[in-house]
Length: 177
View (cartoon, rainbow, N blue to C red):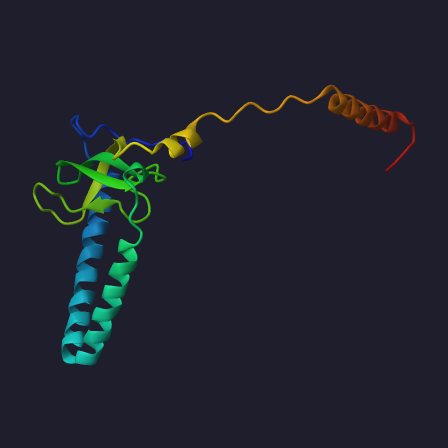
């Protein structure tokens, strides 16, 4: 498991003053959510009018769901994050441990588990820790690599001879390679 430096923004448990960026992001999220909702409503109406299309769509969703389920990660590959949402509530969320920030990759908002606000933007966050401990094999990977092997006397003498030849070549006046 690689060493990852996790980011923090603000302190979710302390009082938080919204920034213009927070307001702008939430407004953009709300606008996008309204647009997508309209698109979904139109698509649902089309599916209801065409049973074959509905069956194909249902099969596609089932295939996508099976694929998503096949990507389950082990507990030691999931980082827990404490987040403050735009609605003001504190929540916990989870992301893959390689993500140094819970707002990356299209996941900058979440539904609030306390008030139910949909797509509340994450305005502050801090890492809490991995869901589980890595197994012994993964912990060994995290251990410091062994120091590089010291060269033998013969290897050092060969390298010195190479460097002396290079040095001599460079000392020859007027020589251009």
